[in-house]
Length: 90
Image (cartoon, rainbow, N blue to C red; front, side, top):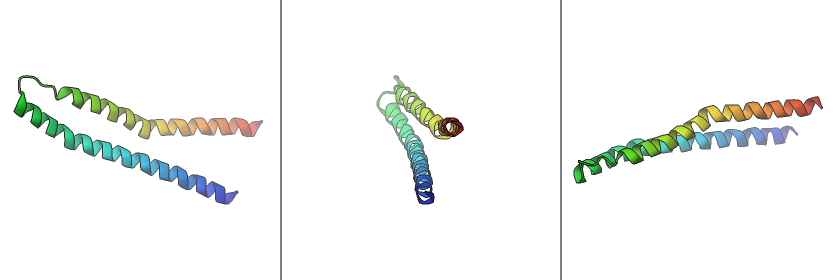
């Protein structure tokens, strides 16, 4: 039983680290790619500012993932604890 609990905790920690790694990769890519897109846009067609579309679109997706990683995980864990407590009361 104790061994299974340790494996579960290890897997949870591993998943959390993977989520954080993915977040930092996404954020780094955003800050590396967006200035490049702005540069391309200003060099090719400065009258039309199309760079706003990927800037805002990618920003929204990163914001959503940020909320999931830093806020949503705590909510999920709280809900799991509530369910486990109710099952233990039965």
